[in-house]
Length: 487
Image 1: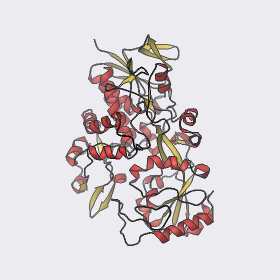
Image 2 (image 1 turned 30 degrees about the vertical axis):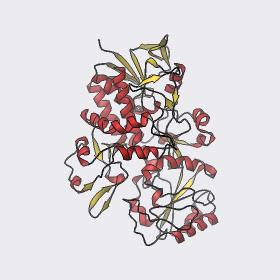
Image 3 (image 1 turned 90 degrees about the horizontal axis):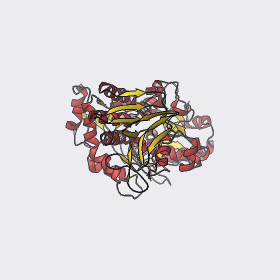
Image 4 (image 1 turned 60 degrees about the vertical axis):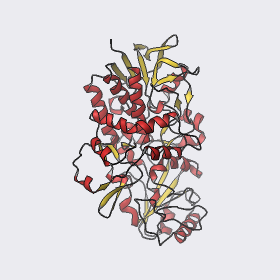
């Protein structure tokens, strides 16, 4: 007789868990806290990019919705090996070796992408954000090449369609409020006074980023001011339920995906906008200019690495600045390289024909300090090395206490623009311990019978940061595993 499986949540990880369980013949019900319009957890808020290991274009073509795109013949995807993926994760581990969870992510990432494609979840090259044109070719940089068709909304739509084709059902407005225990075994869930029983429960309900109290408790007081980039429904419910069932906490609870965001955005990415537009509050082209705090000082090396490796950390650094804001400053040489979020209809910025006039418009910034910083920066720029956004070009500064290592160009061509930003939080890194079947491990070291977890609920995947695009891949990898285990 087929097993009954309850999946708590409807984001990418939850849907992958449901697909996997349905593949094995289970009867699957997904329970969603939100209404149908806001279902999907954080997935709809993303740009849909997924990082995975691949050896070359031959690994990518089978994943594409349009393998006959004429641009492909003029595209250099390069390769992104498992060693490179592992090394990138190690760069954010603060000296820790790769965790078991990270090794699983790296080693099964390509396989998982192929599995998604087999369920008609297809992808397209990220020409607009991950490549630059060079000598007539599209050159990809930073190891991140594909995103779901129609970005995060498309990923959700395609995965949900697969679930429905396979016979899974979704209940909306069904917030799970507790687990039903039979001794030490999880046998179902509560939705208020209602009880639903099942052979297995998969918690895929996200982290605690939308819970201000939990952010402060685990991450510190600076995080009170963080803009929540994603869903308002990820309030740590699954983590609290797992803890009540005896789960072992795992991972880095002080950390989270923290992106520079428009200072004046509404919390939760402005829910009045269509989900696909909510990502436009990100402001992640700082590598093409400089960032200044309230004192008018630079506080990070904007060009230390490709932005894929810095954007999820620099939001946290902004929250450490006076007033918890900063301004990103650009000159018109790079306006055509700025991503669409900088020209989004709701983007906040000031513009002036001179730097002096610009800093006078930058609210909250000390003008003399800002001009001193910008003058010193311009004088320190290497003017001999050519600018090349497709590589770590080595075009840096000399003589500054805080260098800019790559892509340093003088700010000398008006008009100039400055964009106010703060730190936004997308998801948290702390979670529970799971085994190689996705079962939640208890504090006694043994699996909790009937209880599985995936997505943001899994701790040990990310620590001090992450290479962009890894979050959705992690959700798919651990969702698939939990679905198979539960079935």
